[in-house]
Image 1 (tube, protein in one colour):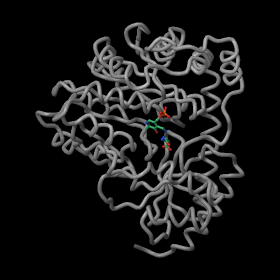
Image 2 (image 1 turned 90 degrees about the horizontal axis):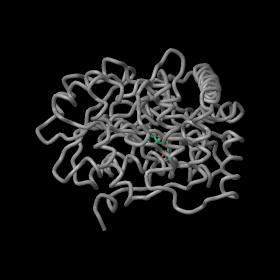
Image 3 (image 1 turned 135 degrees about the horizontal axis):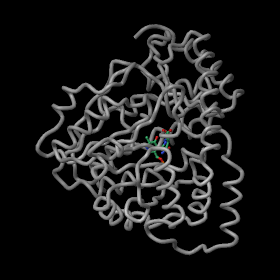
Image 4 (image 1 turned 90 degrees about the vertical axis):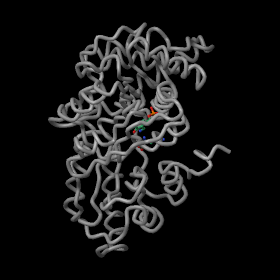
Length: 388
Ligand code: PMP
Ligand code: GLN
């Protein structure tokens, strides 16, 4: 067995959702909406299954979807992409991340990872033979410390892995941080693998800026997106990787031996979704923002300390400041088993212990689910009341 995987447990998302299913708990853990996604997109996919073709689509994706991806980002993020040279369709962002890491990293290379880090980055980076240099971000601002970042670079650094909006902290990286990372990537001749799957889930005055749009980064960035997040259908697993022509070629060589391609009916439906995106994305943001605000006010009323949440489906609760005397991992396990509510402990996103005890809650749920979830969180807090 390869030690990268034999030494790992099952991902926290599946563990928590599994426990929620077993115990009948309210699931505020894994990030997926409680609703089933736009009906017209589902109808398009169903129609495409029946009318076909149902054979292998082109390895880089259906031209209509690649063109729709380029048009969407050109309109919304000013990226000037050419679908033939800059866009590859993948089976979800997870596959795009794996392909990007395999395409860019060689054994002995180093890659910089900001922590908290989405859980697939480190195993896949190590499987590519590289080593991670961790730069920790701290609540509540989650801003990059320029000195820490500079220290993390070495002569072996090949890539920086970025995630904005950031899962799990729900923060959106500002212009200063993006420019700093860009400057160092350019000076040190590094690639930025930019996980932007939450780009459409930003609220209030927060604005998502793509690393690909920062001057000098266009041909040094692999920008990764996810239709599952854009259209609230996380099970669809349709992703996109946008990059300069040379990086796109290398990326496609890795992608062709991972999944080769992605189900054509889903690609057809996602192309339609992107062609008609502006209204539906605005409605999605308004719905999510309403649910976020509702959950925040209920949690605050119950005496929970909530951190700012500018993007993603998530918000985080500071357990110590909310009167909980347990670590986040213990809280999450006992809350699902004893109080009937699943959450995600931040510990799953770190390589070593942190001072903070934070849990992540998903607010892409019905008001009824959120109301019941808060009641159960209050029960969990009473079970673990105290200070650490
Ligand atoms: N990156 C981040 C930061 C995510 O949060 C997720 C899933 N929520 C993914 C990648 C994976 O996306 P997909 O389901 O499209 O594979
Ligand atoms: N990205 C989702 C989350 O953060 C989960 C994806 C998965 O389960 N692999 O909850």
